[in-house]
Image 1 (cartoon, helix red, strand yellow):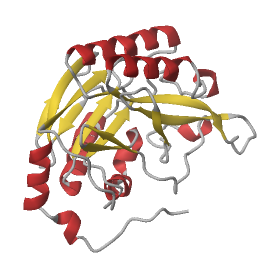
Image 2 (cartoon, one colour):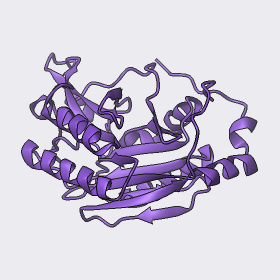
Image 3 (cartoon, one colour):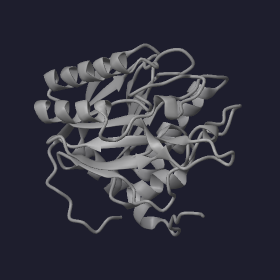
Length: 281
């Protein structure tokens, strides 16, 4: 676990889950994201979580054609809205600075940006596990993030939110590494591809990551064609407190900081474990 002193915790931290339908139209996507932030502000949320690829998405694959720089209009608008509403934002986007592929063609980076309530970008997580599975090859268009990059952990109202992305959910080491960096809650923006048993996998893995890490999980999926949606918020005891269907919607829930502490005191599995997680080259 992190040796940094924990900031004072409030009884509850309010989280808005923005399950958006995203397409290749950047303007429409940005308007939807801004509307979700306004909804979160009206609900007096502390943080809003948008899905993976919230800036632009094509179910056939996302690459440099849908990427924009960190100082581009999407992240810039999120920063302005975060500062205006006084809430933190975690959002998936695509950056254009990926290393070329083996064929020499340019690739982008699947990234999650964390913005604090003042509008500052406090970190960027570049997705490590690319979705080369179930007939898809994300690595044809995207470059992976460095496996040894420091985990992205965002402090919000006394809770620490650690960031994963979509396919990372299948790798328990990724979640444990973020928890070792001090995360109380795992945040998982996703565009979880639909298919046989995929919705079952999504739910089961989110619950498992919560139980084994005695951590909350906020798993926010895209809605729309080819993806499952079904965002969910899971408590550190594995109890699902919010679960959406496949339609676009924005919902707000409270995370109980005291309940998290109580679960970790009752189930000290993090303290009892005998193995550490290290990046594999």
